[in-house]
Length: 472
Image 1 (cartoon, rainbow, N blue to C red):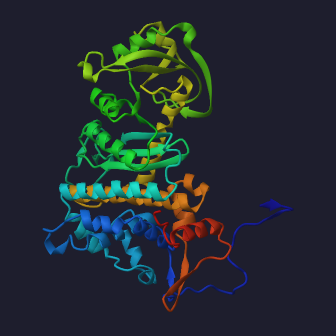
Image 2 (image 1 turned 120 degrees about the horizontal axis):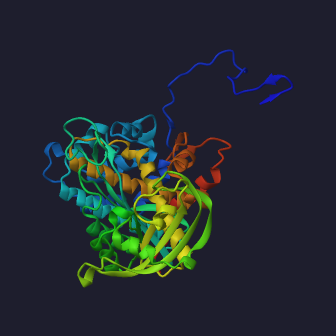
């Protein structure tokens, strides 16, 4: 702040002549928020599910022994911000052994992950699906899912290094070796996305490879998680295929998928009446995928359309195209005719019953999956840490479980944190320093005085340290 000729800024305290440091307090922990997170995991039966379903019995060096303790160690580390196996060592510092038992060392966790095969990863997927269903049943994780829920499907490339990474290859990103995860999320108009499923694929895999059976599993997971109302599957043009749309229809879900440009779609757009276009102003500008320009004004129209009309009857999908058009800033002749010289058109194929502008707005909400991918790349999926493909697949699945645990924890804390980003949740509720005091069989966490998010943390503690409700 500048005023009256002086400048004030944050500075070292003048109350002491000098400042010393001493790493000598055995009762401090850096991540007190893990206490309620682990309590939540135990309440939904996560350790028992791992014990019952993840059976690694033939691994060398007993790598698969006590899988529950190892998965819980991985999850707690990821919730606290670990983006590598070595980072999980934060769970063994200072007084963490007082707050938690059975924490495993990073070397042990690495051996455990390398013990996974494809079958064991599928077992962990089963745990993930069941845990999500339990979280949705015991916390306000997906409010409004009994009315409308969105299942978003997308893929991303994660850069990897070295010559021994199984499955790594140069795919879409020229000159960069990657692995290629496919993921599905569940959200509602008032709830942030949770992860319905994740599959790790080779770097050269096509975007849509395995997407149809993956979607079928994600939709089943969504139903198990309480999505009993309408479900709309959203995706971009990579997933505009007959099998993908048919899979959604068989599960009783609607679709909202970007089509891209093809002769059939272009003909349908050309057939839209000139008076059918509705001007629309977007209060929040978004980026045009073709030009990178910010778009705040456009026109929208719709027309009945049968997708995949050249396919067998069982794969044809009657619906409609919702088309958004934006004026070109510098119109040029490109051989497509006057219609396409003046406007840029973006078509979405949908089978949903929602009114045109509502359906168009819903589709733009597909961007939430990009936010989640960015979150992943800034946390546990910053690295895929093993040379083993199955180990990396297990690591990615653990991240999905950790993400859902984090979101459920936030939903118990406050309405603000239920909508907050993961870094905000971590800063407010997880990475809180505390001093542990022990008395008889009771542990007290002495947390910072005047902590701005004291009330949400107290809400979280109260929700998880009272007896669970009994069934009537």
